[in-house]
Length: 219
Ligand SMILES: O=C(O)c1ccccc1N[C@@H]1O[C@H](COP(=O)(O)O)[C@@H](O)[C@H]1O
Image 1 (spheres, protein in one colour):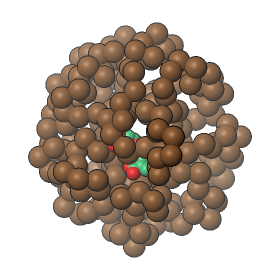
Image 2 (tube, helix red, strand yellow):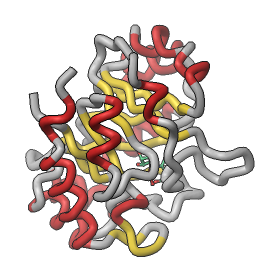
Image 3 (spheres, rainbow, N blue to C red):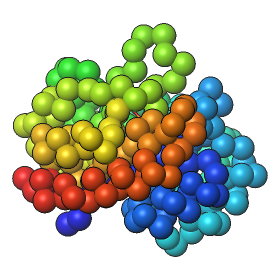
C-alpha cells in the first residue's frame, strides 16, 4: 500500500495544476469563511472540473449545515468529505447517510486523552485524520501550521485508514511518518509562502519528501 499525499487549501488553477502534476493523491478545498483558503462556489466549480479524475477531491468543512454541504457537493463534486469541526458521531453518521459520500473525520490531538472518542468515530467514518488541536481563541480549528506530539499515536491500533496533519513540511514529514506509521499525510501551511498563498516549489518539495519516506510507514 502506498502513502497517500494530500495537498490542502488549494485555491488557484495554477497551484492546483502543480499539485496534480507533482502527483498529489488528494487535493483539498476549504469551505470555511474565516479561513484565508476559503473558496467561493464558482471557483470551486472550476477547480473541481480541473481535478476530476486526476486525484481524490476533498471538500473540507467545519460544522457545516446540510444546505452548505449540498451547495459544496453540487459545485465541487467531491470524492470525500473532510469534517474538520466538532461534528458528533451521530452527525457524521447522518452526513454519510444523507450525502452518500465517504467521510474523513478529523480528530484534534494534543494528548492521549484526545483519543477517547476515536472508537465512536471509527465506527461511522471511512478514515480518520489526526490534526493538531488548535490553541484556545484560534479563528479556525486547523490550517495553523501547529504540530502535535506524534508519539501520542505511536501505539495506536486502528483498523481504519488514517492520515496525519498539523505543521507538516518537507523537513519533518519523514519523521511524522516514521513515528505514527500513518497511511497518509496532509499539508497546507507548510507549502505556503504566506497564509493562503501556495508556493509551487514547496508543494513539489513536500510531495518529493513524502514519497521518499514511503518505506517508513509499514507497521
Ligand atoms: O486550512 C485552513 O484554513 C483550515 C481551516 C479550518 C479547518 C482546517 C483547515 N486546514 C486543515 O488543517 C490541517 C493542518 O493544516 P496545516 O498543514 O497545519 O496548515 C490540514 O488538514 C488543513 O487542510
